[in-house]
Length: 365
Length: 199
Ligand SMILES: Nc1ncnc2c1ncn2[C@@H]1O[C@H](COP(=O)(O)OP(=O)(O)O)[C@@H](O)[C@H]1O
Ligand SMILES: [Mg+2]
Ligand SMILES: [Zn+2]
Image 1 (cartoon, rainbow over the protein chains, first blue to last red):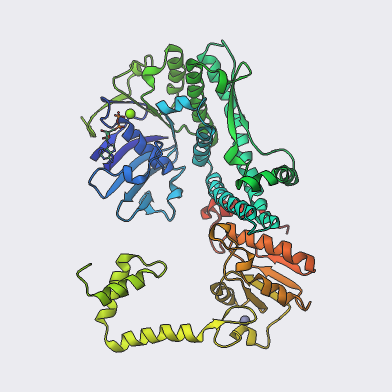
Image 2 (cartoon, rainbow over the protein chains, first blue to last red; image 1 turned 180 degrees about the horizontal axis):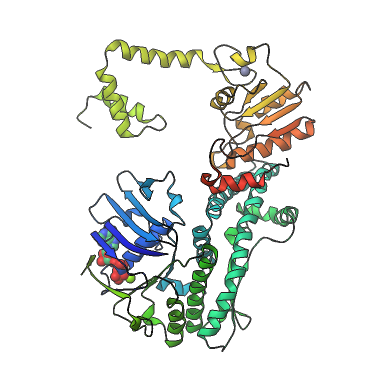
């Protein structure tokens, strides 16, 4: 899959800009604060409907404007598609179109454009909080599986209701029996979500291990595994029993203590937990391998590579890590790479077919 | 807006309190009403008062009624041994439009939602139990909405009613009739597959 053209209107520091991309390698070059991350953020937003910087929509609207508008033209093996997304500050509303047809729900956009983003903050994936790793899985799975996104939405609703119910039981306003309808739906959704994550990671981890070994030249073994907080094997009955053992504690604290919102991805280095032992370099290796494995996984599911967005990370990668990246880039992947200066990615970019986009203050020069 | 006379401001603010109406629409409606002749406006005001005064809830099923019982509970040739439980009087109207159901209804007036402080006590659940006490009813069909709260309400009722010995059924989650499978939304399709039946 590749993006041919992106239009940004009143988005961040872009007033009205159209950008054309080559279908293989693109370097977006500019000094700090000129709008490189903003451009990748726009593509991420079109793919997932949310900013990776986790800010509210109103911060995305250019200062003193009322709305932003983004559109991109993309190609995959079968069709050409246009994706448009707008947001109005005064109406507090998003609107979107896919190939000129308005969508009824904005979430219909998710999965049309597929991206993998690797940004400086992803270097914290390994040692950072579990919520970052769960978000990694959720963004990945939502892009390739429409049902998954729907399940997540239902799950967060059930979870909120179940937590309210637990609090009401604690205060004596409801009876323990009143929890049952929420627990039943909770278990159904939780097992579906965790099951999907588990299956995805069991595919992803092979590619992760292979890439990590390649990057560190076999010096140590890096592994990733999915740690569900609920027992996945077995029946709904087993999960019921697991939950009932927690019941007293859950009522006391007024929150649900296990489920997909408590799951984690665990990295290990030579069988030791990476959260405690990973060096800077090992974290970097793990983060890069994870992102490239994500790319491979999406290709495995969708039959096509997503667009790879690399924000300001290339200059920080050493020769081995760059080599791993080059191997991936030399396949049929469109990459949009930002940096303050051009980075030598020979041998691939000597083959030509790459493009340099220079930006200054939200304008392509 | 502050330059408007007080009575208009009051009208706008009353209208803006109605569900689904924002300040802009409220303003448009207020000016529309002002542009009408007095008779038309009086008719509207009267219709609102009359509806409020004359419409109450049926003492049997809690559907809308003009008097003690709703028209459906007054009908002679309806089955009384099957009760269809819905959240809202509008759901009764929707099912009636199918002309396929000839039993009785029971309107809960909402669904269980701890977030909104709504539990079984706030719904017409006790009254439903009262209707089942005579043993005349053989089946309760639960037709609450196919969302999280509707489903929770259905699960709650099923657990409550089954021990009484009455048959409890839930309307099916399915695909829209006359549509293409290809265009069904993924979650609906997944649900429909899960609830498939043998032929
Ligand atoms: N809503 C906005 N309106 C106008 N300018 C903005 C807005 N949000 C961010 N900016 C500007 O965008 C610039 C940062 O762009 P960014 O893409 O993060 O830079 P970089 O090229 O370093 O990645 C800053 O100059 C900031 O002032
Ligand atoms: Mg940046
Ligand atoms: Zn009635």
